[in-house]
Amino acid sequence: MARIEDYAVIGNRETMALVCRNASIDWLCLPRFDSDACFAALLGDSGNGHWQIAPADADARSERHYRDGTLVLETEFQCATGRVRVVDCMHAWPGERVDVLRLVQGIEGKVPMRLQLRLRFGYGRVVPWVSRTDESRLQAIAGPDRVVLDTPVRLHGKNLTTHAEFDVAAGEEVPFAMTWVPSWQQTPEPADVPALMAAEVREGREWSSRCRDAGPWTDAVRRSLVTLKALTHRDTGGIVAAATTSLPEQIGGSRNWDYRYCWLRDATLTLFALIEGGHTDAAAAWRDWLLRAVAGDPAQLRIMYGLSGERRLSEYELDWLPGYESSAPVRVGNAASDQLQLDVYGEVMDALHHGRCHGLGVEEAGWSLQCKLVKHLERIWNQPDEGIWEIRGPRRHFTHSKVMAWVAFDRMIHSAERFDLDGSVEQWRETRQAIHDDVCANAFNEDTGSFMQYYGAESELDASVLQIPLVGFLPADDERVRGTIDAIEKHLTRDGFVQRYDTGSSVDGLAGDEGVFLACSFWLVDCMVMQGRLDEARELFERLLALRNDVGLLSEEYDVEGGRQLGNFPQAFSHIALVNSAYNLSEALWPDEHPRVSRNRERM
Picture 1: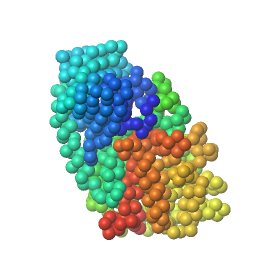
Picture 2: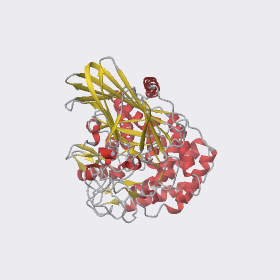
Picture 3: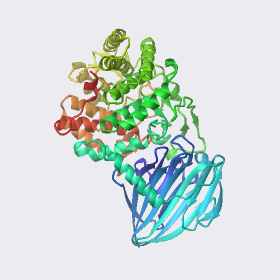
Picture 4: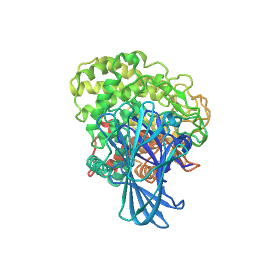
């Protein structure tokens, strides 16, 4: 089975497909990121749906890349009889239509090709009714879904699968367009594959050309920003954490979660990355999504929402799918949506303050909502919660949660003062100080010389406390912060990369282990920069960059021992952290060439 890093992605800012090195699309949900999959081979086998167009030569070797600044993917095959290229992308239309576009281009010689299309709606379970509407068009219908395949290649069916065999000579092009529309709508007009691909290239390059320079890491930053844009729904502005569900944090384990939703935490951090990268338009769209999603009773704030702001994300299991490399169960929905995670208040206030500081403006309704949210937070900040890592064990007083509650009041104070906004500033100051005193008194362990995972912990460390200097709670040269960073480097790293916490403890209530957490490893880079350890920071950062796959993508975690990526893919959290670390490093190393307003300096 292909490794996670063997996949690239294509998308249209409504959904995203995973394309393997062998040019097989093994995951695609239609019409949205969180819809049912019609190709689910990623979590099962080819019988659960896939679409491959590749040389008939089983020994063909492939290389691939994106067209610069875009999500247009080119996979080039070298065969015994020649060379051929498969170009893949998606296109967004107004209204309810999704196109997956594929173009086979002959480069040298003549290459025999094969196509295999197996549509299986309902996450690999529902076989559609397939019919031919004319010589160059097939359609497949099942319940609410209609898919039409247009191509000049002659197609034939066998064993509930569509097949084709054809040759491509140098200079020839063969187009394929798979179009989804709701089954009750009229059959769509055929897509002009070359023209739509050219439009995607123009739009992608125009957008990515506005990305701010990050020194020697500009290309890596641009690829991460393009990926983050692709994870942002074009109509609603919602930002999904990843395009997949149930890719495991441990091969064969049960830590498999659905990440196709909008976490407030991930989305707010994406906003920082987009602003730093020079894309305030995308940041403004997310800000508007946020205000719609969280509107209502402050006591009903959720940690995550659906793409349109849906609140009901009930979790269930797909028992007909064996899971990626037998990592079961496969889950849809996410029960963590019902959790209390106090840190999201801080991330939301932080993001809205940061947006105002970078020209997104002040909305009266938005400020009024913020005031109501922090008024609610005043009543609950001293309660235990499930924390940033969505612990499925007992609630605790997690240090990171309290620190981010402090951030919520701190950013409200700074917004009120900087933008002359009305608010209970003196009360916020008192609460901010009370939280600060509480954290310093209860989260710091004198024996270990470090901040711990939760109040009263004797040995449990947590990489989330690396945020303490990054958000301005304490300076990086504070003795307690130095001790905390030292302890994490000593006890929570594997091969220099950072794991979230000790999964062998009883804190999370889950069996099994996991890989090192890539975002936390980038946070360590940021802490090193703040401590002036620039050579160490650069070395770790470049080691992290080397973990990306051949097209610059990262999942959530990395298996140091197995040398492979783990977790849902591509992971917004990882790419956010990459972008921020690149700008932090470039500013620290070359301040004249790469000036920026650092995140916590802006807020203090």
